[in-house]
Image 1 (tube, rainbow over the protein chains, first blue to last red):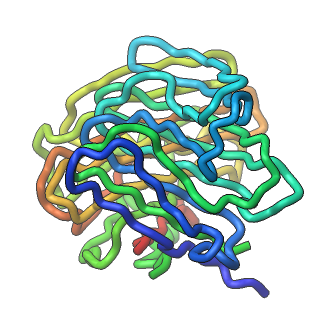
Image 2: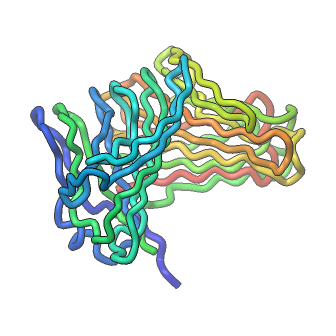
Length: 158
Length: 167
């Protein structure tokens, strides 16, 4: 019987303003796990632009989301993109949790589920697809991050 | 480095007016609470209330995104004296159905304000099913060392709450 786990694979703490944050070698640090969970805690900007394996191909990413801002609800699609954008608004401070399913499988496109929350700006749930059958080896957040922001990457065994 | 169960509280016969976790170790990076609960009164749903470290000052802020099966709504942000992480089933819902709620606190030992993500569902295969996503924050520099979970009446027998550290 498999042992369920939820293990920390990598952590990044931003110490100075940084444009683009990448967690690499996921094929090594994530060996043996089925899913990945990325937890971003941000004090300033919770918008995340995810790129996998550095793939910037037009149309490689698509998404759909639903959101409440405290004053309005909305739902949008984001097809034919060069990145996965889980949130549709600028979230100031908060947490974004993204799960990547079957990230090492080479026979399927990769799907992602995201929950973003900022008590000042809104909550958002989104799903995304990376139209690529390659195993995920790196995750990049293209946003600019300020000191104190953290990334925690966890592995879930199947 | 793993997800470690700190404690599971199971409500016994007679119910319980609240559930509390104390002595939460500061050894993890994140905290996860999983609540399965039902209340002793009410029709469809009951809101859950929570404080951290017994802090009852107006140090909490929340924003809600909510669906009831026929429409979606949103409200906030509101400054409050307690967290409102979501909803659980009330006594009027289908027998033996319990609401599910998960709450995630990243960097719970940080000296910065804590960002808290929650989602809850009270689906009962009936005409009223509710889902709520909440963004909460706790504006306090202290590490989360205790957690007080409350409802306006009682949690019924077989309600459970499990708290995990993730590190």
